[in-house]
Image (cartoon, rainbow, N blue to C red; front, side, top):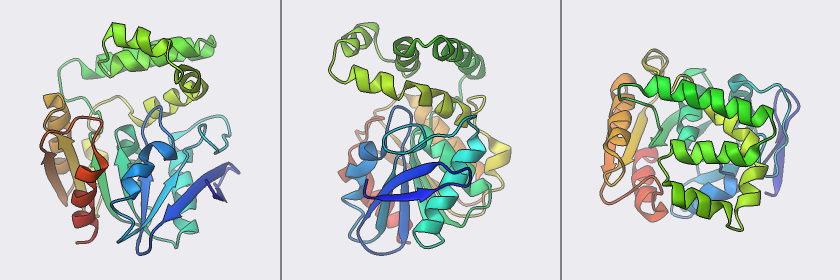
Length: 259
């Protein structure tokens, strides 16, 4: 990341931008940094100034305890100010929940697109989230970062043998490094249910996208987001999973943000 800006509480935020045009900020999800979503900037940078950044507590950005979702909204406010005073937002997974929160908070946002925000639409979803929050909090308080990562991977539905394989991979130490930020994404997700009242207050256009190869509840959650906002649109991408291909999602985003 070649640029820095400072959030309201003094936290240093690392970011970089590519391309020319209206500003578009990409917001990463759990266990991710700006580098994770950077490939999505490639198909968008011919029409937009695409900004990627490390959310607080990960990558090259700083952190200032105690954590609050409001602080991450203020981070986006600082980034928007740094890139011209107005921007569109695109959030991936739980980063989409943060992008929607920012829009509902009245930040100068033109449009919002989100991909597979993992809000629960199934019976027991809130209970599952509460149990995850309790166990995650305990693991992090006890310094068991590896266990915290395992909890998150199980929440995503990863098979046990794959989790144990991940523990032996070269990527595992890096995952443990940013494990404390799992609590931040958990806070952003709230009780895990679609926040319909908050979404109803968003006045800008919102695009909610899901892949049709993902679990069906992902698509249902995206539809629920689109239905809850006054100016919402839902799109399904053929053959895509939660690990969406940038060259597939990119053109859909370019059409929406360029409209």
